[in-house]
Amino acid sequence: MTAVLGFALIAFTLIVVPGPDWAYILAAGARDHVVVPVVSGVMVGYALITLVLVVGLGALVAAVPAVLLGLTVAGSTYLLYLGWKTVRSASAAEYGQVQGALASSSRAYFARGVGVSALNPKALLLFLSILPQFTRVSAEWPMPAQFAALGGIYIVMASLIYLFLGFAADKVLGSRPQVAQILTRVAGIAMICLGVGLIGEQVLEFVS
Image (cartoon, rainbow, N blue to C red):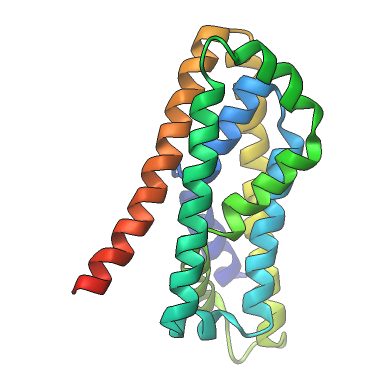
């Protein structure tokens, strides 16, 4: 129980730090009034990362540079694409159309949410470096079950915080189109910067 509570505290501090998840959820909530499909998709992405650890592939992925490079390129490219679309949708000319048209496709929001978290190499490395610290070899539960439990705790906590974040953006900012447009544009730029940052890290590692 001490390990679980310690992990929950660490998980909370990680969840409340803004990142790609925050940017996407805030943009979708404020601009399109879509929250549940977005958060559900992000959580499924984290569930997939947890599954990778449960079946023992996490260390293998991190140890093979080519796999990690491919994941980084895919994740950064997706963030660049999603950020570009988000910035475009924040323009005054398109805002009304986007708000009505995109909000009708829950599957698209769900799929994008999965991509935002599942294709984030930082999330995989984060889980790989932190979860093992809170497992116990002497525990009655086998190691895969411990990984699954810790990953489940993270997902439950993140879903509650992200739902609050999304609905707050919807209610507080969604009724203020100009503010929502500004937030959407900032969120899109943040995604682009994060994507460029991921690529930049790989370039620096390659050069060094």
